[in-house]
Amino acid sequence: MSNIIDLSEAAVTKSGEGKYTFGRQLQTSAEWSELPNLPVTSRFVGATFDSHRFVVVEAGCFSEGNVLLYDNRLPFSWKSLPSSPMKECCDAVAVNGNLVLIGMGGSDANEVHILDLSTLTWSQLPSPRTFRDCCSIAFLGGYLYVFGGFQYTYHPGRGLGYGRSTTPISSVERLNMKTMQWEDVCPMSTKRGYCAVATLDDKIFVIGGSQHNWGVGLDLVEILDTKSLTWSSGPPTPIGAFACAAVSLGENVIITGGIRRFHENKSLGTTQVYNSSSKVWSVAKTNMITPRAWHAAGLLGKGQLIVAGGEKVCGASHKCYSPQFYDTVEEVILCSGWKTLGPLIMLRWLAQQNRANVDTEGVKSESDLAVRKLVSDKCPEDVFRMVCSFL
Image 1 (tube, rainbow, N blue to C red):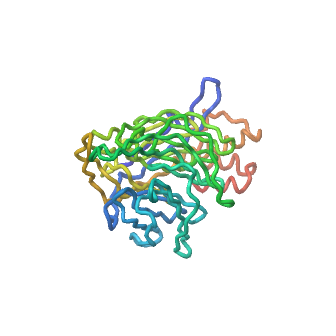
Image 2 (cartoon, helix red, strand yellow; image 1 turned 135 degrees about the vertical axis):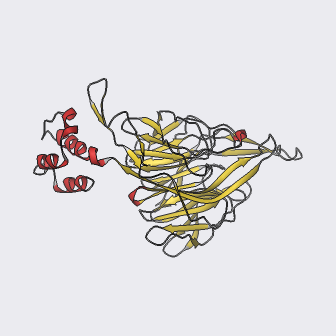
C-alpha cells in the first residue's frame, strides 16, 4: 500500500491574495523496508555524494572511527574506507566530492579533516575559532558552515554526572574552501546543539536541536540566506526534536527520527517534511521500523531515502544513562507527484513568460497529451523534455 505525504492541502491552492501556489506532493512507494545491517552498532553521521554514493561515519564518544561507503550501483554492501583520524566525530558533509568531518580533538579543541575519495587519504583542515561539541555542518557555495553546539565547564571532584556543565552556543562560522580562512557569520537567534541542517537552493535550514545535551527537543526552524548572510524564521516543526537527521529533495526538507525528551527513554520513528513553496510541515503516516536518534540519513537517486545506525536512550537518570546502539539500515522510496503536477509546472512557466493564458483550475481535467500539445511548440526544448520525462 502506498503512503502519500501531502505537503500542502492541495496540489494547487489559492492564497488570500488571489495568487496560485503550486505545491509538489511527495509520496512513498512502499512502507519502510530493511536493508543489510552495518558491520558495527553505533551512532552515525552521513553524507551523500551523488545519486549513487552514501557514506556513514561512526560518531560520539564510543566511536572507533569507522567510515563505510554504500554504492547503489553495486549489490548492497558496506565498503570500509580509511578510518577517521578523530574518534569523536560530530558531523559529516560532502565537499566537492570529498568527505569532510568535524569533531573533538584534544583539550576541548575542534578538528576538521577531509578524506579525498579518489586517493583515500586524510588531511587536516584549519579548526574553527570557537570550540563547539555536538555541532552541525553544511557545505554551500564554496563555504563550509558550522552551526551551534555545546561548550563545557568542568567541575573536578564532583563525581559522575556532575563533572561538567553544558552551555549551548548560537555561534556560526564558515570556512572558505579556497583560502582556508574561517570567518564569523551572524549567529542564530537561539543557542542550541544537536541541530539538523539541510541545504535548499541558496539557503541552509537549521532545525530543532536542544539547549542541553540531556535536554528537550526544540521545534525551532531558522533559515540562513547564504547570499545576504541574514537569518529568517521558518514555521516550527510539528514535533520538536534533537539528534535527528535532515536531507532535502527538490523543494522539500525531510527530517527523520530524533529525541523529543531525553528522559523519555525512547527515540522517534517519525518522518517530518517541509515544503518550501507552501511553507507547510507534514508528518508521514508510516514510521521507521526502528525508531532512532543520532543516525545517518542520505538521499540517493530515484528518491531512495536511507537511514542507518543510531541510538536509543535507555535508563536515563539525572546522572547517567545506558545507550542502545543500532546497526540496522532502512530505506523508503520517495517520489514527487509529477503525473498531475508536471503539466501544472509547465503551464506556470508559460504564464510567467506571458505565452499562455490558462485557467489554472481547469488544468486538472486536461490529459497529459493535451497539455503536451498545448506547450510543445512554445516551451524551450530542454524545459519541455525535462518535465515530460516525469509524466
